[in-house]
Image (cartoon, rainbow, N blue to C red; front, side):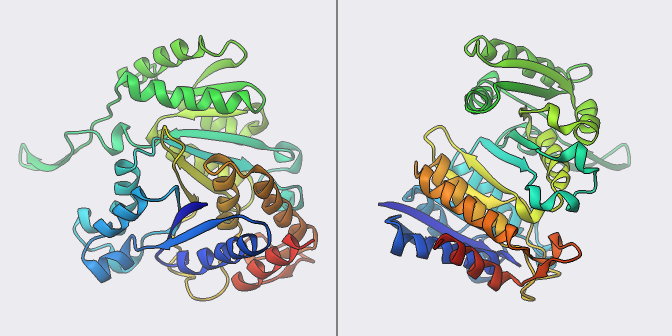
Length: 357
């Protein structure tokens, strides 16, 4: 029996997590999944109810569970709050408190959606890339940081920092994933101008010696951004820092045609994970039954694969999503001429129906 904390969050998070729960409920009832669900608050909805984007009750529940399924956080109505009270601080707090240092962001192009990509089909067809992003250190967490008055004007500053141990553990994570794939790791940095990246590159080279079966290459981040657009299939596993990974993973996501299709995992050293779609809370479309729930459903698959060791059921979910796509059903964000456009709720129902086949 596994225990999973369900955190729908804000905006479309409520709608898309509801569809993932349909899949979990079906597998609990029909495939001996054995997943106990615990429900909690995070983000803006948590602030509205408790005054904090990460209530202590949510953190306590997370520490008592095996994994987290998260929807999305954020919205216009909370943007005026003090920084520490904004919804995103709840997400960052979960990552830090649970030490979720390894963020896995797959970029997979489903053959049925090749026409949805903004690039030519021959460039992206067959794309299967994994970006491993360091998630709890780097410039997003470094101190000192702030905005102050210097020399009579406003001065903003952040600090990019990494201990070698932080680099080493994300390196091991990337190499272990590569061993299960095509055995190639590309480490992305800016070592030509940043000392913190010099250390990053040196440590990656040291880590690579423990994995003689995996090929290590290096690429500056500006070139990596160009290569993702020019020839993305050259990459197998890409490992990089928090900031660079944030940017490159979104770039890679759009190669697939829609960020509504892509899940993510954030893991600690013990295999505990927080699983979520890569997209945001999209408050502009919340409540309209048009959000794409497939990334959230596929996040359940990733959870079963990487944290709960339920590989067969993960494959079953992936197969069900493929069946629905083969049948021509699409939410509007991935629809092309001739497709059947369905809403959020119907897409969830279709995946459950496909699980029965």
